[in-house]
Length: 307
Image (cartoon, rainbow, N blue to C red; front, side, top):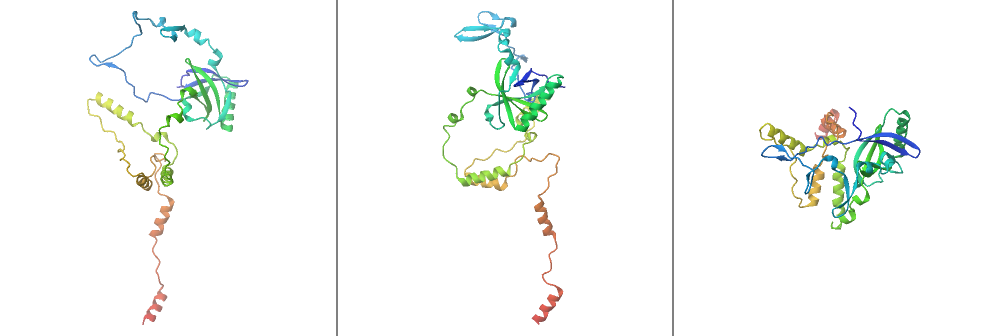
């Protein structure tokens, strides 16, 4: 079943308008969430919307309000808000293009898939043109979007056969690293330590396979819930032993490099693990029968000489 679009509108590149649907690229279903429960009755706690001195109110009596001073609000209806910059709400203008690595990762917030909307052949063709042009130039397009009353900068980039849109944070939402890291000591690490750390990183380098990483906390939490349902003790979940305290950094790095393989094997699970070819050649050389140091004629000459 196709994902339901939570935003439909257009991407506009100069005079070219592309009808699109935006669908979430992530899901929260895999995460375990909790409700607040009244323990004596086992019933879920509900929250009522109340006005002090009046009590519970109907939903249709509730409007949005902006506080201009203490307990003083400017009231706005949903219709009034929807009428503000209607074009900007339904259109993403690509106003700038930058290199794919030009944006600090801290600004990226949430990914969405961008799909061509409807059966418009011209729109689908324009969608493909934009995707391929971004791919060939290794650029990402920047624009702005308004969704559910919230505005955001967006970056649009190629993603396989389609397009990916990522919302970006505004500068005022990002803390400056220069001030956050002020209290970190300025002492420079020794070159030999850095070299060892680089060796360790190279030993554990490989391709990113997200399926190799398991959410052990969610697995343990699910086991606890299942155990309580089945009135049994939860089974222990295997986890890596805690690391010992580092006393000598140089020694710890040397031991890590000496015994450090890849933390996550980047081979597919079904692929057999084979030994390196060089090791195989050495084993073959060792298996060969050693040659005699002297021939039969050579041995006779040696015997005569000894006599």
